[in-house]
Image 1 (cartoon, rainbow, N blue to C red):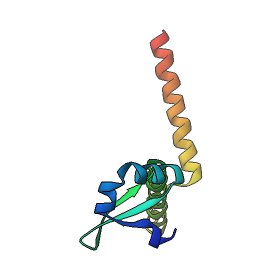
Image 2 (image 1 turned 30 degrees about the vertical axis):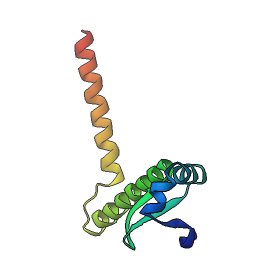
Image 3 (image 1 turned 60 degrees about the vertical axis):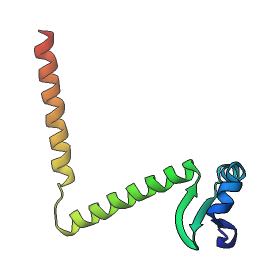
Length: 100
């Protein structure tokens, strides 16, 4: 991304809103809008925003997983599958009771 083309003053946004929104949407751009020479807001295509949020969520999951591994807060694979089998058995028992 060329920042020289991606930074616009709020006056430009006011006078070219439709054109700017169309450009951001069609070209998946991210624009920085300034006010009094300072960056104030970001104008971004909604799909790019959603992808960014999904990527951040995955990074948070990875960070939490790493932290849990470091602190030894995890279940073994065997225990995990054993718990799943127990839940399936419990579900089957409950289903059989309901049908009876």
